[in-house]
Length: 334
Image 1 (cartoon, rainbow, N blue to C red):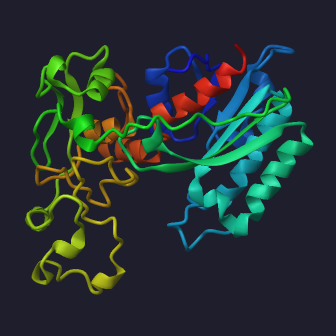
Image 2 (cartoon, rainbow, N blue to C red):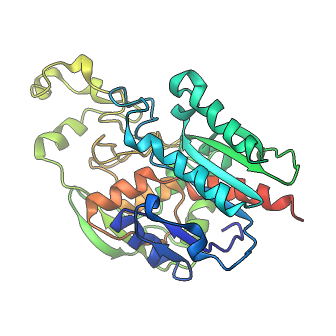
């Protein structure tokens, strides 16, 4: 989207690798554990590389993960592999991305350590937490970014766009669906000239809505949905319908949340497990709706089982947020 030509990508997860491979046929996808990869094997001798970018798995750094947020979590060692790639490739720029919790992990000591390591390699380092909703994404999602360069450039992150994109802007033109409905291709509910500007951008190159897959919830779950208004969560459900919860006080605030149509979405993480509810229909979100809320264009097709697809969408960095940062990096070369 921003204009970079990706040389190769490393992805261990089979479904995610297949998704990347399908949507980026001109990029080599190395489906392997990054610990086993020597990046020089995939570059020409003395090849110039503009940027190395990546997001090591973030389960260990997430603020929502109180059980394994320490250095004993093997996922946390993967930032060492990112450091190794940058050190061996010596790109002009790097971009390191993670959950906001990375900045608070071990009271900020890990962030400081990573910054120091990059500085020792000769890079100026610029960390910041960005909100996706500031950059054209219909979702209140914050991510930690660390951009660095060895060109002596004092990098500044892009300014927020100002206008917020709402849930209705994002998915209002997509077809009406029912609980458990799984249809690959359906007509859009609105013609392009009646759709929002955001929806028209997402629909570019696409004639019909794809991957309209909705998880099937049990009847008692759908009954609970009836009581939840936009912006409300499980607390609106009558107690007699929540008998299987031993202690409602332990329910996460994100469970059974119905999206507000007139605001950006809450975080689209594990939206199936959290049972995020469509603003107007008593059902969960479809694959295409969740993808829209993450700013994936409609021509982007996800591979794997429904559960794997939902996880890929929830794990992703919103493309339009990434695009804004990469365009800013490219602007320094003009």
